[in-house]
Every structure is written in structure tokens, then in C-alpha cells.
Length: 323
Image 1: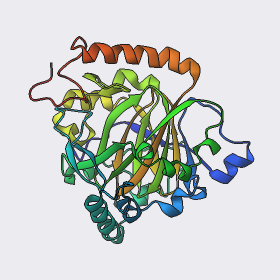
Image 2: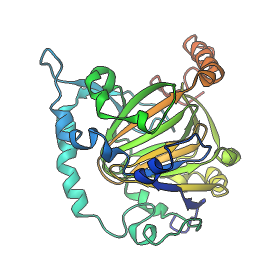
Image 3: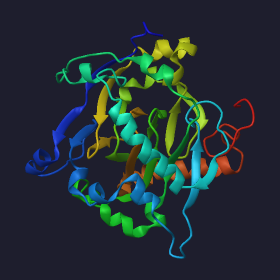
């Protein structure tokens, strides 16, 4: 796969938090936007670390136990989730973080430093897909942790309203995991502010017009549309790889303190270069709730009644070949 070029990419539109504030703040837009340093202005920048979250206890003094994602859920067979304590996992990530940073090189990543630092706005480039060949599949990942409902006081650590003005129904999930994890290619029906607190992640984004090249999957997910393209196994997917290569993507490197706006129906996948803590804030305006939320809830009801894509979904363990 070393000769595979894949899609052509350009750098995502980027602005500093101070520049955005000087322009009057964020305005709705159809394309992704990377806001450098937005999270550094929030309490989470000082308070959120692997060890700090590991120290969390319930009011009765009991340890925090939650469900971990077991392997990549967007493609292939959904595996049984893993239920385990949070603290030991997070302390391992804290220890690994310093080691990985010390081993960082100019060749690290899909878009390595030696390439990324010299790119200009509007310039087209290709990624180093060989970077994924060393990844260990099916790593346990603390994905979509509803920590802000479990510990409501932590909501004060994120001033997301400073970026996203106006009323909307929002919900938040925390993603915490090791380096070399992959979030598979998909798009969400709501808009999303993705806030990077610790670690570095690479975002590959594809605006909606790329849909014909995304090999849309029949696998069901409540809030997302999935792709059959597995970026970790492109060499094993000649048909999907050929279609994927026709797409035109945007690349964003989300460093600690950055916030990335991901518009609804924007296909994206994510690769972690370091152990990371991220917060995804999804939001719907009232018209979006009616037009998008209603149909999604109806499909969810049909799914629970075994009438819509039952046995091929991200919400239930699959024991065999998808239907």
C-alpha cells in the first residue's frame, strides 16, 4: 500500500481564537473550521488531565466504572463492549503520554511534521497511509463517555457557548484513548464542536459532495451514517480504495487546546497520534430537531422492533456476518 496515494487533501480553514473573537465570534458555516487555542481559554485546559480524571470518585466514594469500546465499531463486526474501572486505564495513558512525546519525530503521522509544517493554504497533498500499518487493531477505547452527566459540575470547565452562540439542544461526549486509535469514516447528522484537551489527533474531513466516493454502509448507527471504507485496511479493500481515491478531503491537525467545527453531514475519520482527551459537543437548533431528530428517532424505534437493520448495527454485539 506504500504506492497508494488516496484522496487529495487541502488544509482546513484555520483561525486563532483571538482572531475569531475580533471578528465578532463564530457564525454558522457549511465548511469545517479549526480554531487554534480556543480550549486554552477554558478551565478544562488547567483542570483536565489523565490523572485528574482518574482521581474522580462518586459521592459515595466508589470508583468510576464505565463501558469501553472494544475495537473499531464503524466497520466490521461490532464486538462486545468492555466494562472496567476508569482510573487504572487513565494512569496508564498518563505514563504513556510522556514516552510517546519523547519519541516524536518529523515522520510521525499521516501528514508528518516535515510535510505539515511546510504546507500552504490551498495546496493539494497526499497522506502517508503506511503510517497505519503498525497500528494494533481492536484497541480498547473510552469512547462516547457521558462524563458530564455523571459529574455535572465538570460542565463548568467548558465554555462552549463562547464559540456556539444562540439556542440549541446540545449533548456532549468525552473520548479518551491511547495513541494509534482510529475512529472510522462516518458523518453525523448534527453539527459538532470537537474540543481537543490533551494529545494530538489528525482529522480527515470530506464535505457532503464527496458522498458518491464514500461507499456508504448499511450498518446502523443512531446518529451517524457509516462508510464501508476502513482506512486501516485499504490494501484489503480494492473496490473501496479506488472509490476513496476519487474524493477531495480536508486535513486538520488538532493539537491540545484546539477546537474543530465539523458541520453536519461532513464525512470524517480520526487518527490519534498521542494519548488524548477530547470532548465532542453536538448541537441541534429547533428546526434541525424537527427535520433531523424526528426521522432518526423513528428509525431507532424500527430498529429496536427488529424491523430496521437488526443484526447489523453499532449498538448491539454482532456474532456473525452482517445481514
